[in-house]
Length: 375
Image (cartoon, rainbow, N blue to C red):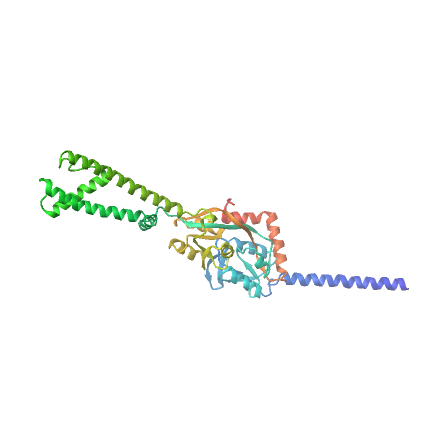
């Protein structure tokens, strides 16, 4: 009897274990699909960052969003039969903190996976490889005041001021000289000064002497000396202005990260770009939106903008009338993921859906929808 009793007891215990496992699995599934039809909707926090999150407008039922991140989230939520509502946050930092505190259940945007954020939230499977790049405003040429400033810094402006003084003195001396020794020279002072000034500027700009025979052979010699001086003046002025404009063109160009030290760069406040720029000890100016940063770039507040490469590339492509260029290679490579509160089983369920979409090629198709075939 005893062996039969123990076999019956073992069977009962095994059945209880199986039932407990099924109940546990059902509970986990119910937790992982919080917000399923008939439950409390999931609070989805978003940060507007085209083309990943685009705000299409506000209707009676709330704001409507689109973009690659939104499309991916909806594609992963659909098989899990999740219901959700969107809430917009003003920055990546605010979005991350909302998830950490439980004010939002999931963060949906081009949120970069970093060590600091992983300590505060749990990330899903990465779904986009990105990095940072630089955006600059194209400038056709250096302005007048920039050239004048360059001439002053190079010391040419002082030399040109001396040349202007010499021209004025030469005009006065030449007018006095011709009035005394050249009978054909105008007698009135205003006409004489005008004639003398024309003579000096003719020599200075073209090397031509208008009155070479005023004093015979002495006039010829003095005229030749004037021509030499004029050619030297023109060569000096031309070379100095050209060199300054060339230097301005070179120094105002930003082509890579190495060109940024000593300049102020615009960044998205609370972004990885801001943290990375400060780690490099670059002078930064934080903005609330990319539009604000671009306005600062055009106004000369910043020399360049550092931001997520796909975001900057998309902005420059969709604002083709604005003189903007994304330059240099991608640096500080990173990945995007959805963020969840620590301990939320929904992160595992969403990760499985992301992997399924990736294996089916739907994730790549979604990427091509917004970025084309370029990588």
